[in-house]
Length: 106
Image (tube, rainbow, N blue to C red; front, side, top):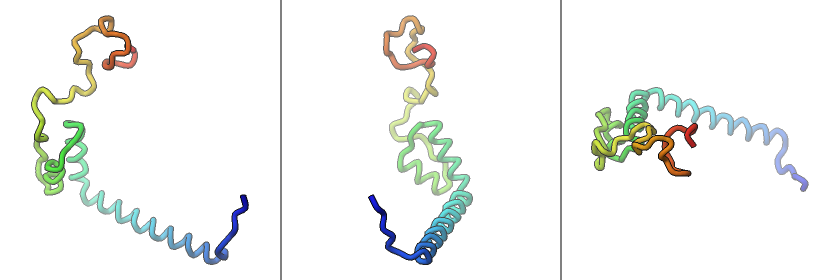
């Protein structure tokens, strides 16, 4: 395949500079927004670590600077175990292909 050049070198350079300007400006804007809201970012990260997922009400609370609270369907039995094996079986009792436990057991 042959690639045809549809613009001059000067025009291509001007386009590249404008694109770079847009990218740099918006990168700086995004970094500023994140830095200004670092407390909300950390609160959201902590909620995600605790609940694994968060709902709209929790996000709204975080954005207002409030504690997110538990999700609507959250109860003590549904708390994540951090990936720990909760089957109660020893590695020898697990059936072939059963999910759970450390990778070294599979």
